[in-house]
Length: 262
Image (cartoon, rainbow, N blue to C red; front, side, top):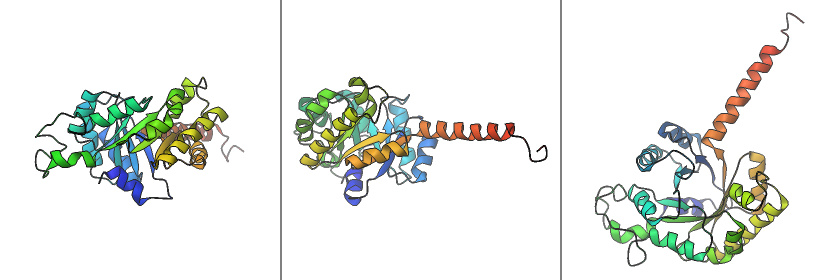
């Protein structure tokens, strides 16, 4: 069974908590895996990661309990094929606007006759040819998550969610807010209403839907809407927030009058 779908099946009623992995550092990724996150997005879209460095990230995470989701840079069959051959088992495909694009993403993840993924006898995905019957069983082991990032996608949410082979859905709140003319307003009532529409479509299709929020407070608001899996910030976001808080505290303590002077 696909590891992400297995995680979702094991945690019904308690949303798995993840984060975004953007620092392009295997050490940082491994540390996050040890920190206790349930899942994390290895992000090829908005980070310096190329194919080889993505392999290194997946290798680092393999020794932890964190379930990796690899976000490809675009809904492109060649990119998807190469990332799957590199060993990614769950893909997140950005900017899916309609059912046809969702079907294209699924087809890129499936060997014939169900799809158009090119067959390779020797790859990291098949443990270099040692996984028995890999080519005939791989289709069932690959998970496909598609992203809602525009009002057009929200309008087509029911049709996208109903596509066979789409295993889960994900709302990108930053892009969705931006395309709605609400850049940076991540809890605006209109944005929250669009999110509720996406959640309703996912529930009707019986498929999990997730989201990411920058702070625990925002994540809590998203959870109330009904999202099934949640991400908090990113490795870089968590690092910068902690670094700035520590720096501010030290500077504040250094500028305060000492007890002796008082």
